[in-house]
Length: 264
Image (cartoon, rainbow, N blue to C red; front, side):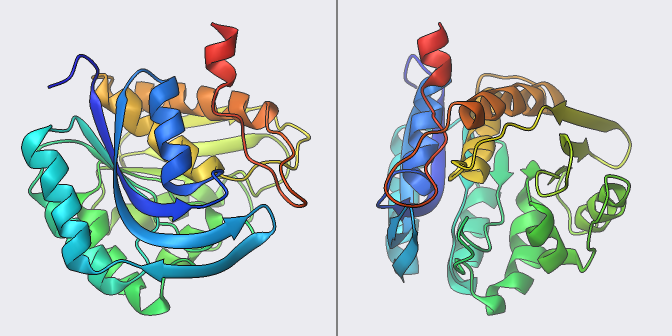
């Protein structure tokens, strides 16, 4: 084991550096962990959108995962873009055999609305991937895809969380950032609730927020923090990253993963 906790991201590559594996590794570094990666897909992506995506073979994903976990070890795993049912099922099987908390970000579409998960893979996410999740972190569009529950207010987040928990994750984090007003998220395991609130920043440069939040949760879990503390700390980190988001290219720029390091 390294001097720092080891955190593994299993996700797609964002050639523009704002989301995906690139965002995950920056977050892990900023939060005092050693980031490692399993690439599931390569995208041609910039601030304007996704121009192309190519998933890797399941055997390549499995080989990367085993190479890292069997030699280096891991204290937390985070998933992002998994693209297909075959990759979802492969990754779910690998995580099930790993003794580490898993943060599942069920990525369905990019910030620009480009599809990143085949519709045929949704059932595999429900039945294979969510049951191995320590924390599942869907946004409102993703939770509607997975459960059919459409959230139009903070009160509806309870119903969405309950529907998601039926698929087996230990904790559900329903991200309410697409609702008007405060940026409110609900974390629950079905018994206790934690409402996480933050001011909404007037900043359009928010590319990579979901990846960043899930990676931050994984980093804090790797440090040994309980789930509610890990999620609250991750929420604080991503809120600061959104506030410091910056223009890049001609479209939506990324959040700033280094803001906390500069503050220190």
